[in-house]
View (tube, one colour):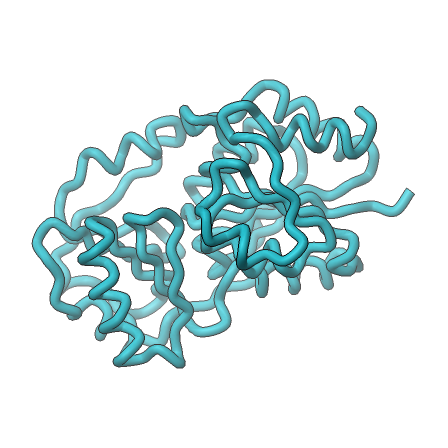
Length: 265
């Protein structure tokens, strides 16, 4: 049996509508590891936010966090860290934006935000991951994995245009949801992180099965030998991932259902 790497996004993909792991998902992934396969989670979430799901699965797995800025092994060792150039982080922090758009920085050590936003904590309620409020003028521009703007899509489109005009060739700009604009250093994405992980495991892209639902999954899904796109995915993702298979809804544990059939569990 050829070992495979199963890599999945979290929100909108592996997690249910309540942002938790379904019992069947836990069972299937544990069974696949027992068969000798590898598992990785790849998310825009922060590493400390993702660790909770790894602990719930109770299997050895790699974590690709902050859209590929960081890669950790099953023993918590940091394998890779890719940060925005300080001058780019400074420029992004200083971009004019409407007051209702929240500015966030994901750093290796935590999450900084420019003002209180209690509604954002509901997404992380099950993990306990929380932010520190830091005025933009006091935000540290060093060691920033990504800059994240949250708010109205029209306002984010203007911010995206400004970022591309100023430093577009030196940034990787994507969306994890329509109201979440995410900016990393050029070349930082889930696909690049997955490439390095496959090399480390001695596997090829053909040995990889990937699952995703949004635009920040594009590179990862395009790389994998078997790419599965959720029924609830961003409409544009189906066009971006050539050969991607449409599977069920994340609220119905579709990843577990598909894996159970694929591996005859």
